[in-house]
Image 1 (cartoon, rainbow, N blue to C red):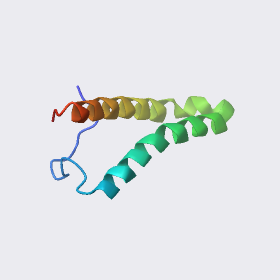
Image 2: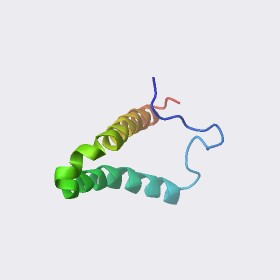
Image 3: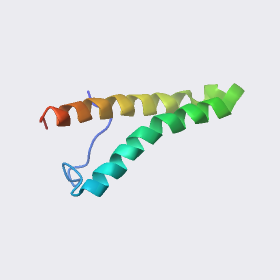
Image 4: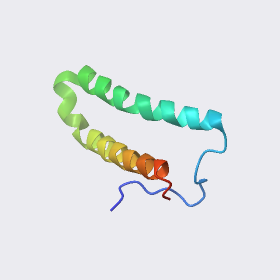
Length: 74
C-alpha cells in the first residue's frame, strides 16, 4: 500500500528539463533537511517521531517511484 497518493490532476512527469532538475534537487535536499532538523532538536527529537516516520515513508515511496520511472514503468 502506498503512503502517498498522487492526485490525478498532476501530470505524469514534469514538462521541462528545468522542472526535472528542481524536482531532483528537492529530493536530494529533503533527507538532509530532515537529518539536520533531528540533530538540531536534540532532546526534543522524540516529539519529531511521527513527522519523521512520515518523511521516511514518503522518501521510500519516492525512491520506488523513481526506480519505476527509470525502468519505464508507470
